[in-house]
Length: 442
Image 1 (cartoon, rainbow, N blue to C red):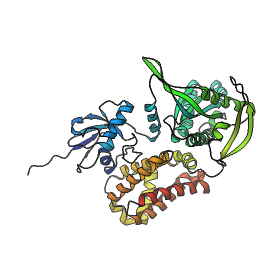
Image 2 (tube, helix red, strand yellow):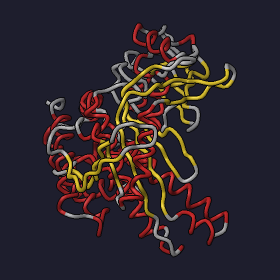
Image 3 (cartoon, helix red, strand yellow):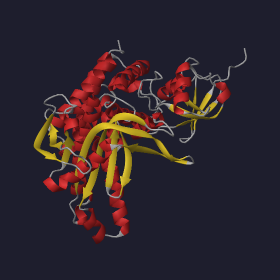
Image 4 (cartoon, one colour):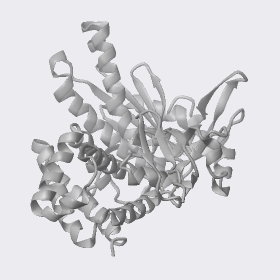
């Protein structure tokens, strides 16, 4: 019998080729089998679009778009070259490019659902953050240093917005604006995400001051204002130059709330509409103010936000993730050394390149933290992760060892930053994740 040609999948960008021996596997499953990091928040069920790819060559070797793909492509106005890897099967060679490389890029995809040419009213949480002390820094340092610090400012304060399912709307000088709920969602979640982002930003600026800005003789502070209400969202502007825009009184009010921090010497203020969107006893509140904002003929009630009443696992994990994975290779190496020491027989399961396996581990860990802000996708993602581990030969008895080794590695990598509350948050999260995955290892 003549040899049957095995399809070859070429991953543009990382210059890697793999053979597809199982014709019943999707392109996403091919990535997972070959330890190629490929974001797939909904677990390959065609419910999100994070596994999207661009087909560079071999389009005719793929199956036609499924009904799920057709609807998604219509709404998001995709050209024919963009496909969902979880919906694609191939009968021949194909050259593809992954389009979503990092978890922080996922939230930008919300903008594809925003209407063009018209504005649509949506209920959103709006966060304004202004940096204080930047004028002194700018006047006393070179323009090169100022640009570097401003970029670090945008990065460390932008990450909490992105990891909490928000989008960065604008940078205006030394101000950053985040939106939560652009693609919908209930008001409790949108407001809770905005509050968690604000608290994460507060932690991030303290860390920036103590570590990266210590040699600049400046102590940067910030003021944050959060409001909730219906605003008009759309791609607006000249027919040949439309831009994403958000218009409405709730946006203007959020800006004024942020400015009011200066008058009353607070760091984070939230409107009464935000507080009333949360279950009672969710957050700790300091002082309460009543102020007539410019353009209003009524008083706006504002509350000083101090933090969550109970430990918020997501916030704890988010605050430590960048420290934990600052050296991904070292983290993975330390973890696998522990696993192979405690369970030597497990070493036989890892037949492929350990460097690739390490990248997959840290990619998975970061993905889980990011996906916690989208719990509807997290459970589906863990299902696929559990099923794929079964194919690798992982069984239920392996999970206690994995959990123990991960916990030890996290504690060691966090070093002085580690405290009982933070370690408890990681333990609870990992226990939930491994418990969910174990369901598919029977």
